[in-house]
Structures are given as C-alpha cells and as structure tokens.
Image (cartoon, rainbow, N blue to C red; front, side):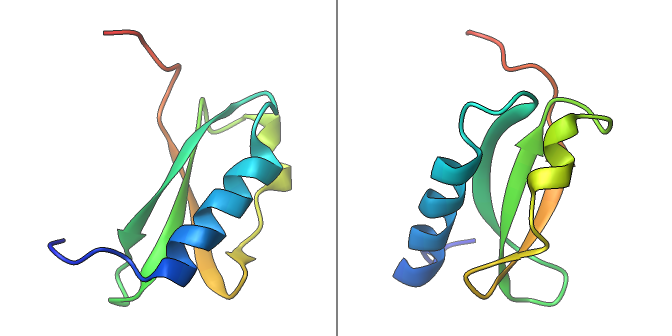
Length: 76
C-alpha cells in the first residue's frame, strides 16, 4: 500500500487504541486495505479466545474493524 490512509482513518484508529489500551488480550492496532478495497482498522489480540474480543466493535467511527490474532508481543 503506497498511499497513506486518510487522516480520518488514522484518527479513528488512534481513538480506538485509546479505548482498548490496557485491556487484557489487546496487542495493538493498524490500518489495512480490506478485501472490499476500502480501509479498515485491524485490532491485534493475543489469542482467539481473548476476552478483549467482546469489546472490539465491528465498526468504529464509520470504519470497518476486524481482529487478527498476533500472539504475545516480543522484544527484539
């Protein structure tokens, strides 16, 4: 993806991260182009049984949201 996501998508992602930060199972979030060709927010969780999944909306500020299992973050 060569182009930067629109400012409204970046702003929505930041506000969703603030909403979810600190909750068990939350790893982070990013922006991706979904299969429909539109931007989406991707919420990374530790595992598919993480309790945080109940708190992740399907849409945030008009932007589709999906979850992805990323595992436990590791230091490099």
